[in-house]
Length: 113
Image (cartoon, rainbow, N blue to C red):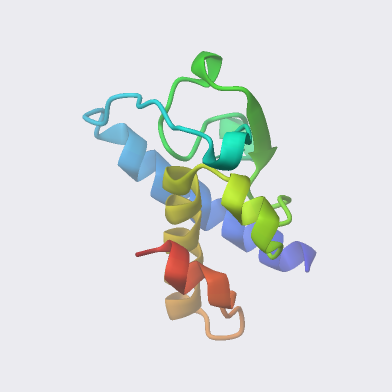
């Protein structure tokens, strides 16, 4: 499982940095679902703490490293920032295309839409 997390973290980092490198996406306000505070997903490693959605970190409350977040739990995914979740799901699907030994979870296809 650690290998899977490391691979996803690398692809997530590459994907998010390409996306963030464009610099054209403004920070956006997300509204919590059912009065829950949104949890933003972050990168690990050298870029640790960078939000996958590109929002400024000071403007939001809760954070979790994407590779360690319990995203298999539907309740947790409902609290996750939709933009962060989509970016991470896209990275997981990209990894699945490159290496069939690491299939993306079922929720990733839905979140990537």
